[in-house]
Length: 138
Image (cartoon, rainbow, N blue to C red; front, side, top):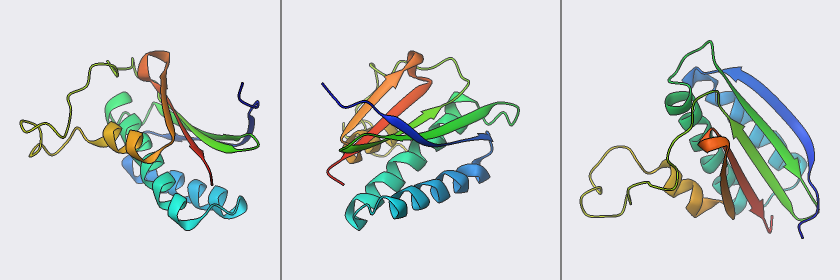
């Protein structure tokens, strides 16, 4: 059984792509304060900003009247970043493979693949409107 998590920071912001910088700043602060190794920092930054970008663009359809909430929680061995949007969710268990030949040249569709490649664990909750990215061995 995993150790219980403690929330260490949370921020809410409007669904404007310019607010991705808020998420970047939060990742910087958390990684610095928890002495995250620079190799892991890059993975965290890319995965979290991708999740936030997806929440803004796809979850909330860039509606500035809808918010994205980014929170960070930790236990003895892991950091988890939770991204919540106000959208209806999506069919996260039925996504096209971005590495399939018919999808290679498409300009979108790689975000979740990236998140799953960079995080140690990715959970989709609340019908996909909430994404939990967990990083261990920091």
